[in-house]
Each structure stands twice: as C-alpha cells, then as structure tokens.
Length: 177
Image (cartoon, rainbow, N blue to C red; front, side, top):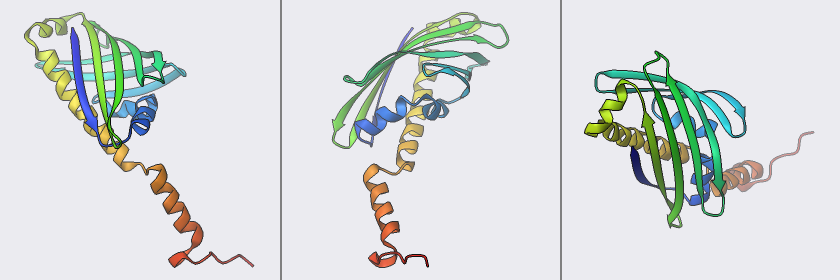
C-alpha cells in the first residue's frame, strides 16, 4: 500500500533537513513511536504502538537509513517490525524529500510503501490504514513545527549571545578582580 503526505513547515530548508535527519531528535515526533536503541549511525531500534479501529498493535523492530542525498534533500529509510503479540509484521520503505517553498518555508513530502501481515492487513482494503496514516502524519507535522519553533535560530542565538557578552544595556561586563 502506498501512502503519500505533504506538509509545509515554517522554517528554512536547512533547519528542517537537519531535524529530519537526526533520528533521535525526530523519532519522538512520530505518534506512538519510541527509540529504544542505536545500533550504529544508520540503524535504530524502536517500538511503535498504533490503534486501528478495534485493534491495538505494538510493533518492535528497526529502522535503517538506506540512502541520504544531501544535494537533493532526500532520504530513504527501511523499517521493519513484528507485532509484540505475534499477530503480524509490518515493513515500510519511506522516502522523504524536502524543497523550499520560499526563503522561510519548507515543503516536506513523505512517500511510504507499506506491507502488513496479520489481522491488520484486512484494514488496508477499506482505506482505514490510509486514514490513520494521514492523521498520524498530521500529528507528526505539528510536532515537527513545534520542535523547530522551540529551537533558537542561528541568528537569534547569536543575538542572545551578543547581549549576554556585552552585559546590561550594551555595557561591557566587568572583569573579575
């Protein structure tokens, strides 16, 4: 099943690119996901809990960063997991691509090819999985925005550092005796 989502984020491309490529920082933005281990700089272990209609699934698995194209601001990840109750598996190939919407906004496109086995696979036929994925992506995008808004920009951080270094009202700080 193919799932496509696009969101615009109020931050320049370089800041969004840095965040989405920092798995430990971006993982908490995925609803129901938790990073449980880092095997190396491209392989991560984690869990994902999802409710789909009457079913509650909890998957344990890993994500591998397969390709990062800095020049085109795109990346491909492979995720795989097994339901902790043994009721099925999930595999996904996820491609992200960023492009500037303008100087201060970035468009993030995510395309996922998902294969499910077990009881949950029957929900894909009616579109329920796509509906849930769209809702979860919306929550992910909101978290991404909040994370970026909560971080000082380089210019803002430099201005704060200058104010602190120059002391109150632009005066030079006193030297210690």
